Amino acid sequence: MSNPEFEEIPIRDDMIRLGQLLKLANLVEDGVEATELIKNGLVKVNGEIDDRRGRQLHAGDTVTVNGHTVRVVAAS
Image 1 (cartoon, helix red, strand yellow):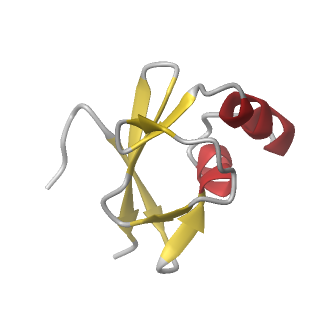
Image 2: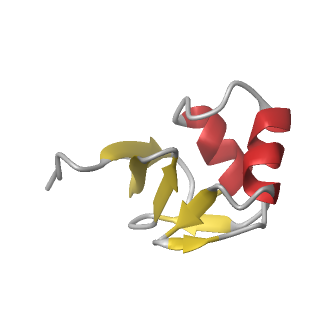
Image 3: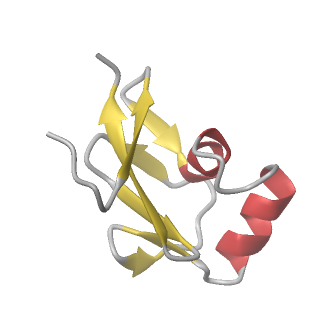
């Protein structure tokens, strides 16, 4: 079921790391930008600021950057 508030980002494995998801969802240009946003507390995972670039995300997790939210979903 889709929610218009979230863009759904399908992943092919059981999990994806936060830095990788930011790039996959086109929320950042590269890993350097991802690191800076995360380090500066500008990334929220499931509504809470997370400063771990390697944070493991699973289907159902949400990530918000600059007011744009994406949700991780399992690939069909």
